[in-house]
Each structure stands twice: as structure tokens, then as C-alpha cells.
Image (cartoon, rainbow, N blue to C red; front, side):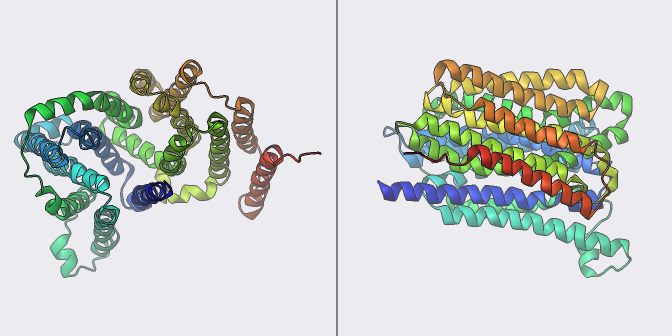
Length: 494
């Protein structure tokens, strides 16, 4: 038994590390983007990738999970399942790309980018190839070919980051300084601007697709329409759940554009989106921890299910999870004077006030993910979809109400309200279906203490520099000391 578990743990670490490192590397491009682009230009990048998030979920329509499910059923041949899914995704992606090419100008007009219809075609190819690539990547995971999976994904990331650095950190400064050379003259056109971010993505996803072609060509074992129908029925709830999740994550950027455009004008609207999108990235510090935690925690939760003290273990994990999140929140907010230079362009700093709101929103989301073990272990996964749709409804309604009044601040508060509501609803449902006695007093204490200490510092008139950082460091040490005092192992008296 130990060998399969070690293998599972090892592969979980590999896949998790790949995802987290990839997200971290692309995250470190934000300073480059915000340094090279004005707020309204970065708003274009923020908005377009919000649409990408929707379209990738829509074009894969839950088939990745359906592939895992049906390739393990005895009544179906794994190779036929793979072929059926690949053909299906090829067909839908081709139709999507062809439609984008035929109506690129109309779509660009609708997006308010009438002079850039190429954005539509570039992203259609990016999303289409990404959707098709998801299945051979899933097959690599199913076949336990972790090394090839990592190589292909890291190659995709390195190409994307490398091309961004080439176009924006090398060619752009050379051109602006009048130090042109054959590389700049051959590959750089200043009129493309933010389009180089998209071109880098297009090339990177094309390279990934080419590397996966040997695996894709293995899809030659017969397409079965009846199998596809069953897989689609299985995947449909997953599609709805996935779209609901993407609504919660990205719909605010799209709604900002649609709602503010009429009153603010295009340039000011895109500027708000750019500021919000850049400052949102700072809150992803907690998201990265949550993602790493989920890769490690989910296998652990399932492995603990049959233990006598499983629920007590889950409760302890929640407490420690909140401790880490509260510490990250306090650290980020107390050292915001330094962290804000992650966005080197001061034009973006006006939006830093959304960071504490979004940090708490992501903490609420992390607690929800932690709680979600109740419907996974009890086999009532439909509640996950219900909660996701509930959160999406809150997101859309509150953004619609608050954006006209508060702008992107309304979007930040809507995000917090959404994730906090999902967390609360999940907790209420778990009390009935799979009750776990979380230590609520400590959870509220640690979160309240972290926020309270930060709130107090906003009223302290401390001189900037080493004195301020020293006092803030002492505050964090005191916070950790309180935690240690409350969490330290109790001595047993005989």
C-alpha cells in the first residue's frame, strides 16, 4: 500500500509544483507590464484575459474530468475514450476559431477595439489550441507520465515569459532609445503595443500544441457518438460549475467595461480596469498559498477519511490554514509601503485600497475550499455546483448595483461578499450533511486580531523607513507569539 501512496504523493507534488511555479512566473510579469504600459493599456490585457478564462472553460466543457472518469470504466476502451474526446474538442475548437475569423471585425467592434480585430483572431487560436491541448495533457497524467507533462508545461511557460521579456524588456527600450538593431527592426513594431503580450501567448500555446502532436496523433481508435453523448451528460454539471467559478473570479473586469463605458468613456474605463487588475495581482499572494495547500490537502483529506479522529484532524487543519492566511494578510498590509513597488508605476497605486478587501475575500475563498471536503467525502458534490451558482448570482447582482456607484471598489466588495457568502452557506450545509467541529473561537480570534492590528496601524503616524518597518515587524512577532501561546502543546501533568 505504501508504494502507491508514495507515488500519488510524488505526482501530486509534481503537478502542483508545475502549476504553482507557472502561475508565479507569469505573476512576476506584472511589474514589467505595469512599468511599460499605461493604466488604460494594461486594462486591455486585464479584460482580454478575463474573456479567455471564460472561453477556456466553455470550450473544454468539462471533458477533461469526463475523460478521467470514462477512461477508467471497464466497459470502455481508454484509447477510444481519448479519440472520442479529441475529435469532439477538435470539431468545437475549429468551429470557434473559424467563427472568430469570419466575424473578427464585428466582435472587435463589440469589444470596443475596432482598430484591433487581430486581437479576436489571436485569442481564438490561443483558446482553441489550449482547449484541444487539455486532453493530451490529461492523458499524460492518467498514464503517469509526469516528466513529459512537466517538460511540456514548463516549455510553454518559458516561451511565454521569454518572449515577453524579449519584446517588452529588450526591443521596446532599444526602440525608445533609438538603439535599433536587426533584431528590433525584424521583430518589433511599436504600433502593436500590448499586442506583444498576446503574440507571446499565441506562440507559447502553439509550441505546446506542437509538442503534444505525437500524443494527439494517437487518437485513431474510432469516434463513438453514443459515448460522447454519455460523456457530455456527465460533464454538463461540471461545465456549469466551472462557468460559475469563472464568473466569481473574472466577471467584474468585464462588467466594469460594460457598465462604466457609457459614463466614463473608453480611456477612463480601461484605466480603471487596468488599475484594478494590477492591484488585484497583489492579493494573489494568498491565492498562491491556497493553491499549494489544495494540492497537498485534498489527497491528505481523502486518505484520513477512515481514521477514527478524521474530523478532529480536519478541524485542526482549518485552524492552521487560517493562521497562515492571517499572517500573510498582516504581513502584506503592514509592509505595503515596500510591496507596492511590485507595481513600479505610481499611476496604479491609487487602487491599492482594494488589496485588504481582496485579501480577505481570498481568505474566505480558501476557507470555503477547506470546508468543501464535506460534500466531497459525503458524495454530495451537487452542492458544490449549487454553492458556485449561488456565488455567481451574488457577484453579478452586486457588481451591477455597486459598479455605477463605487467603480472598481464596488467590484472588490462584491468579490468579498460573494466568497464570504459561499463560505457561510457551505458551513451551514455542512452542519447538516457532514458536521465538523471547527474551532470557531480561534478562527475568529486570529482573523479579527490580524485585521485589528492592521486597522490600528493605519492610525499610527510612524516615520517611513526603518523605524516603521521595525515597529511593524514587532507587531507581527507579537501576533505570532499570541498564536504560539494559544497553540503550543499542553503539558500533561501526571
